[in-house]
Length: 240
Image 1 (tube, rainbow, N blue to C red):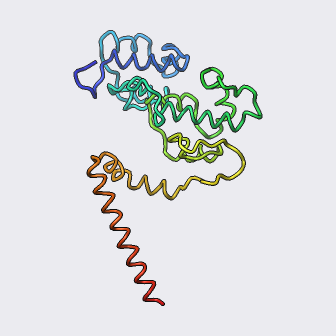
Image 2: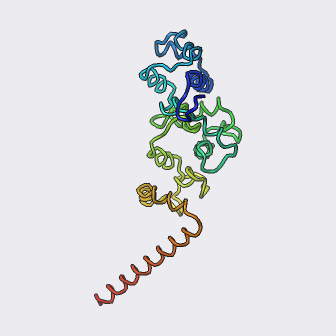
Image 3: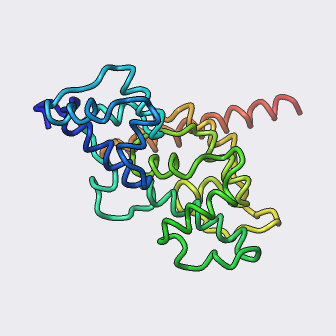
């Protein structure tokens, strides 16, 4: 690895390609044939420790369904940063998506057993049959879970709706609800979620405050709410 954390060598670049190809059960030869790249040319990136042209990197990223940023950065897979399966990790989100998928279709397909999530071959097949048609390819969702690419935020809301669950459950694991055709007593509030996205920088700053600053911010908000309530009461009295 180069000294800079944000740079990558030809060796590391090809190692990343090999890792993705292995996950997709593909070979360098198949990738080279698909992109009309000589195998010898690709091999020199590693033997001479050099990077290919920018347009070649872009073509490889598109074919492997990963982002260029991940492919040329020093970042490794997310799961290697953290050995624990935290509720907000990408791998955990992916697992909840398939849990909701299984809950929705378990009465239609007995392959949705309790072990299907750990069977990548079966999971890929179930994904193609039940989660295809305008959603997302299995390989792209897998790459996202590994931290190799980004996804459109709108997809998560679409998944929640079509899997008969809530966005809270998909994203955080909160409100664990069994998918059904019935409406939930606590449906997802999209307006509140959109508002949170609009002020996400401010919310993140607040989240990072020290305990003392959080208490101060809470007191200020409470005082603001008290004043707004007082103004509301005064205006109501004036109308009577």
